Image 1 (cartoon, helix red, strand yellow):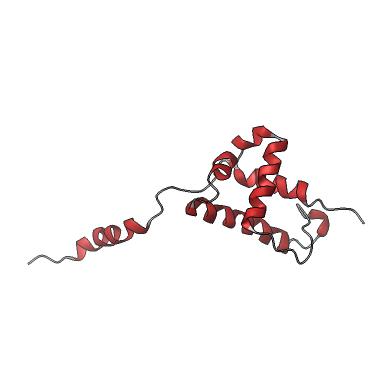
Image 2: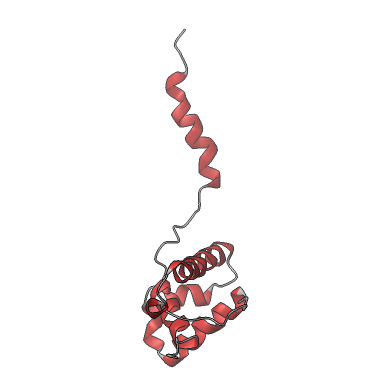
Length: 117
């Protein structure tokens, strides 16, 4: 009788395929994110995007290099981030076709500029 070892990769793929994301979420356009903020995959992408930007700001040691300066002790909700993003696109509609990461960073820079002291 032949060994079934050669079947394990196929079995693993069959088991994992149903839990794989149906749509890759990397580099989404701003308009897609704004049009689908409550879609679970878009919401997860958006939260990850914002958290990545926040972590970047938190590890920058030199304040002069901060891309934006949120107020201290401010917890911004997903809905507020969507509102900040939407306001940026209202100011400059062509940003709907830009990548969401670029537009979100730009929106945060405009919403929370770093002021010279």
